Picture 1: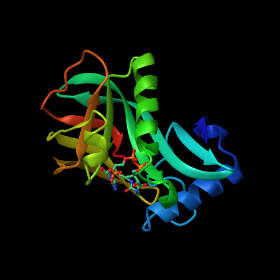
Picture 2: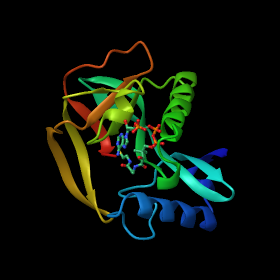
Picture 3: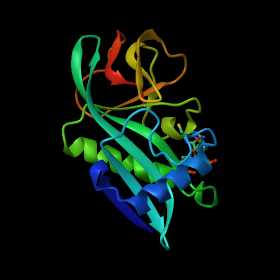
Picture 4: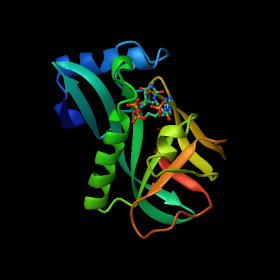
Length: 176
Ligand SMILES: CC(C)(COP(=O)(O)OP(=O)(O)OC[C@H]1O[C@@H](n2cnc3c(N)ncnc32)[C@H](O)[C@@H]1OP(=O)(O)O)[C@@H](O)C(=O)NCCC(=O)NCCS
């Protein structure tokens, strides 16, 4: 298996097609042929086996506000593993690679949204109950600002000495 770390601007058409194929297989509601929901991420981790893409994780590198304190975060987006390769710790490996990268580069927290928490709880994330504020985007149009508690979804993994606070999380952009 080959693990690749690609900046978003480096993605060529063949790789884009492979990512779109895997995203479509893993998330049936994903916009057909596209490799992002709302906006392009900053970079991706890709796992290849015999020329086929078998696992994917996109990452947003951004500042957010947490109860007034500015925090550097990596946001985990569209983590998925081809069905035939699931339950082999591939997703855990990608989360662990991102943790190492974040620790090396002064990232305060990993953040993600998930309905099923099991994978993330076993990889050092915990559920957060903060009220959140974010930019609502739909099909390349800005709709406004949302401000609400996201029930049982927001998960956080601390990487620095900064403490996660219970106040408002301002995403300073769209939610991933
Ligand atoms: C979720 C997913 C990425 C896990 O990949 P994986 O390589 O099998 O994960 P790991 O082997 O590292 O860990 C497996 C554990 O993750 C948990 N898990 C399984 N499906 C999950 C899901 N949809 N969401 C969260 N956790 C999940 C289980 O605890 C599982 O343990 P098990 O193998 O004992 O059953 C993969 O099942 C997948 O691509 N699902 C479809 C897309 C998806 O739902 N992505 C998550 C978006 S938040």
